[in-house]
Length: 452
Image 1 (cartoon, one colour):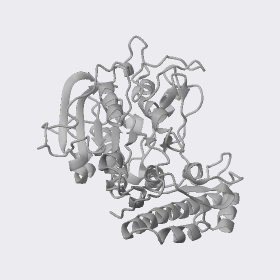
Image 2 (image 1 turned 135 degrees about the vertical axis):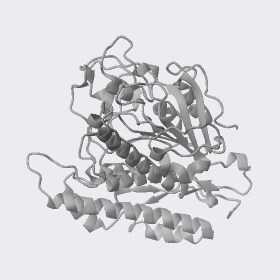
Image 3 (image 1 turned 90 degrees about the vertical axis):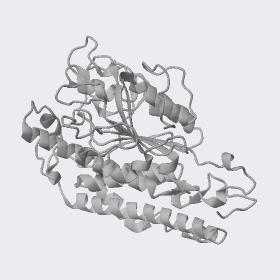
Image 4 (image 1 turned 90 degrees about the horizontal axis):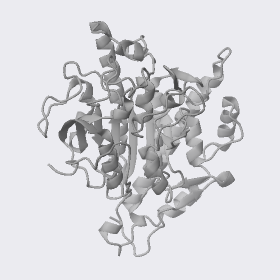
């Protein structure tokens, strides 16, 4: 580690045109030589990745057959095997608020609304929606005191229409998993251009052609910062220089990919509808762009909290790229039809591979004396277990990341059935340094996350 008695300020920015500010990643030179190791730890980041419609486990496709450290990865989860040492498979947890509790049908809406709030939502299609404050926003209230952006809410599927989306429940419940207050759901941003500009500054027009013209004229926000970068590099150690170069190159690569998507969109005229500029047609490329933006936001400490919806709850999106032209929601109601079961499993595996890209980016992004994954907790899963039956117990959940040394991975932890998932969320808050007295039906913190 390159250490000096006088450290660069953690919240140092490079200044570009029109007041654009570019935050820096955590460099070794930001840590004073005289500061104790315990005081120089990187901050904990919290990420929540949601998949809709449950995950099939009819023949052990998801849940490992044994508990403890000797488990084998089931077929659907195979893409996460390279990260075994920093991964916990969690089974037996329940979101009771997702059940009907006298309200009848509407399990998909309740699943989306309860996953991070733990609160049974009010059944309404009107403006009088009511759920609870989600765990990410409880953390954001604290973390946002030290970051530019309190939290990022991103996704890969645009919001549903206003009004009702599921058996008398408002679309607000299926469109997001993040709630700032019991009556304020936070919208999910699916356009990488919009996320990029939120992080690094915006322009004057939302028109794709106008954006292309502006980007060609300006070239890149980084071009106007290179003089500052060059001057800063002269005082950095070799490892810091590499970190800074890799960080800036990642931003430039994201710019290039967004511009390519916008060029494609600008040349393709769709009748009777507007297609947002910057959204790639290819699902995987779209996912990678959004994940890269989330990772850079974590790396630069622009935010420490993020939610990522791979699709809206109840989504009927098709996945032709993996030879599943049928709607996702439709095939989950398989009624034991082998063809529909196979198609659902394909979608489940595809989603896990998408999340594996997220994990890999975090693992390979330096942060302080480790990686972003070392200093994070990423929760992946759904608030429905069996999509055919709409069950809300024994939820499919995976927790990845070291949590700054507080999580011991490489294990399958099975808890007594009906253990509140909210116990896990309270434990995650606690390990992130955020205390909460009451959260949903939590009965305390889940145990064994840190020990054998």
